[in-house]
Image (tube, rainbow, N blue to C red; front, side, top):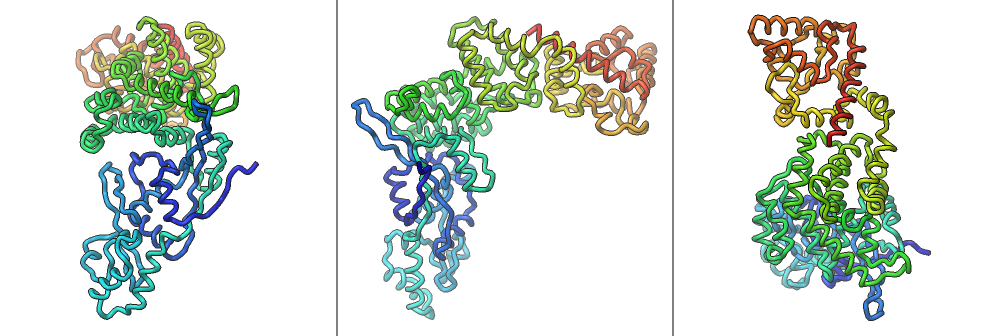
Amino acid sequence: MAKYSVHQQPVETLLSWIKSGEIAIPEIQRPFVWKSVKVRDLIDSLYQGFPVGYIITWRNPDVKLKNGELSAGKKVLIDGQQRITALTAAVVGQRVLNKNYKEINIRIAFNPLTEKFEVLNKAFEKSPEWINNINPIINDEVSITKAIRAYVKLNPEADEDLIEDRIENLKRIKTKQVGIIELDSSLDIDTVTDIFIRINQKGVVLSNADFVMSKIASDEVYGGNKMRKLVDYFCRLLVDKDFNKHIIDNDTHFAESDYYKALKWMATGSDDLYVPDYIDVLRVAFTYKFSRGKFSDLVALLSGRNFEARTYESTISEHSYNKLSNGLMDFVNQTSYQRFIMLIKSAGLIHQKLISSKNSLNFSYALYLKLRKDGMPESEIQHYVKRWLIMSLLISRYSGSAESMIDEDIKQINEKGIAEYLKQMEQNHLGQGFWEFALVSQLESSSVNNNAYNVYLAAQCYGNAPAFLSKSMKISSLIEQRGDLHHIFPKKYLVQNGYIPKQYNQVANFVYTEQATNIKVGMLPPKDYLEKVKHQISSNTFDISTLDSNKNLESNLLVNDIPKTLLNATHLDYNNFLKERRKSMASKIKNYYEQL
């Protein structure tokens, strides 16, 4: 079976397909990312008769309608959106959105004498040698005779025959051929992705979420195009509050919809912890509503796939769009969203840098929405969601083939219930061997992006622990203020004694402490700077530390999981210190997990 067909079509046919909707282009809500000069280069290539690459379309499968008839699937544009946008801008004269979501015209000027194209600016506009805008000529709005006459009038020395020849050649741009690769409707998404990457040969990562976005954006029957806006606009409002004015001013139809009413709170809301992008929004809504994890399944369901009969049916399509719509509305619901953010923070995950896996957050939010929908009491929901989140971070649950893991987890939770499945996961992954050996060895690392270490910091925030050698400054405050990590055994001291970065930058040698304390410690060995701290306590002067009693000093070491041996430690004790502290940190994480 042929997986695709390749053919050539003139530019004007391609553009007529787009106007008639035969090729469904995802609504161009995303900004046009090409620079204007690239549009100029594309037009120049067409004029010269050079190849301009392929447009790749994928035919949607034929769908069985309620009355039993088959409806032919539209072609969905998979690759070439920027080129087609460039053509509609330069040839048709349509406006495009720039990166600031402002509508702009891209006008291409042409010099018939030199056969050069340029993006129109003031200099070219004033020069009689340049035709200011090519699209009226290409589009037959201006006849060739009229164009030649106007040009020769401004440039009396020009050779009229030459000008005629070149303006005719300009007009022929719309007859120049563009290659089209049409992928067969029977192909699954993974195959389409593979073909896309091979054709591009740029290693472009086209995620299945991009297919979902193309799929919903090109649907006008079940409101998919509005869902696409809901996702796009919500993600945009997270990071750009001024964008709300753009929606109200430029998309009045959407601004009157229920979708806008559901998301407009984010115009004044904030979230610097989760900050989902469009893939995350789709992932959560899909996992929560459909109890599946693979985006390829979502594309199939939106296409109307009947997995048992292996046919495509409009009723399945309609049902799937409704479910996705409900899932997206629940995702952006202000109460659910803000409660989930509070829940993450209450687990000690107070800063984005403590959360190494976005998919752990995604799954936890999907789980939160599901348990709320199931009517579980809020206190129980919090317990299960916090535990799931921390467990998935500790075992790097979604770091490999995330979709397969998400698919498995949501199906198991549906089948067994969260209580039983979480217990099963804990027995399989968080046994005695994990806490006493695997976790300790995870902490033997010089990377602060280490999952175990970040969970340790969350445990410290959860317990409201004070910073090292500080009476009242909390670790959580230093993390929020983007305070620095400091070495317990000072870096310069260890360097002096022959230690290399991999050794002195061990996470077990790091603490959060106040800048002033760190400066005063300098490059002293621990036994010397701690002797100074004890001396200052007895003399009631606070220079290195704000601790005011030996009891507070002991307590501060204990809460920072620092072995008492530090009080007399030199570089000779460093490796033993690291081993002891790693065990103590692992024990802290275990106690924290059990309290959640």
